[in-house]
Image (cartoon, rainbow, N blue to C red):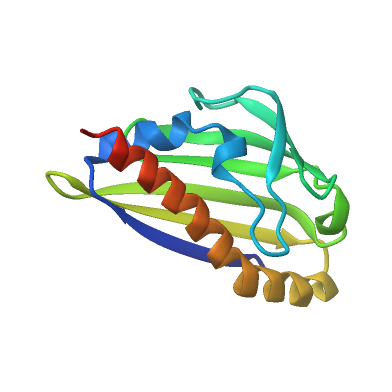
Length: 159
């Protein structure tokens, strides 16, 4: 059974602009260390911006682990999704794979809601409990911090 978490953010900018800000962000700037969770320190393969389904990159993280990321859904201005596999480090025994989806909803002429959802597939039932604890306790702040960086970028470049 997947362990899922979803975090929203409201941005004062049009959806197409927020989408462009999100897909063009350098992964190292987007995902930074937060509490016990590592940040991205290096990217190999495709770098920003995400452009087409099938784009693949590998992230090296601050805890010396890594993960493969592949773009699997892409509708400009509306949504994108990616699959995470080949986890190393502490997540390797816990996570078989994960899927992340970003949805951008226009709330008004200059207001957008981002919904960022992660669904982790545990390696076993025993791993599911540990994974559930990590995802429910630590992941919301991790994602919220990253979404604030997207918000800051979109709102500061909107003018």
